[in-house]
Image 1 (cartoon, helix red, strand yellow):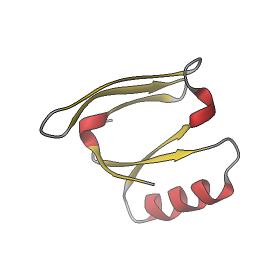
Image 2 (image 1 turned 120 degrees about the horizontal axis):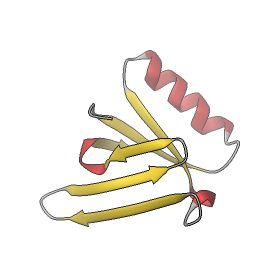
Image 3 (image 1 turned 60 degrees about the horizontal axis):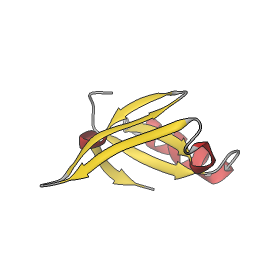
Image 4 (image 1 turned 180 degrees about the horizontal axis):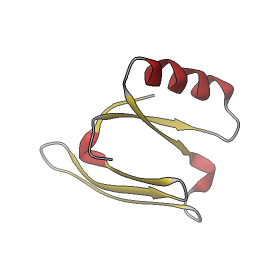
Length: 73
């Protein structure tokens, strides 16, 4: 994902996270949802905070450049 995105940190089958993601997508906002239960078996994070976040978050569904994250829900 090269666009700016909102990172949604959630749990499996969280209807509210899906509802928020749907509204954001409808407004043209990029969204990436992660399930905290996937860590560390199905999700990895490599990050550093220096003048903003950099690194990658990788899940079975895809990956995101943490520098592209403009908000977290």
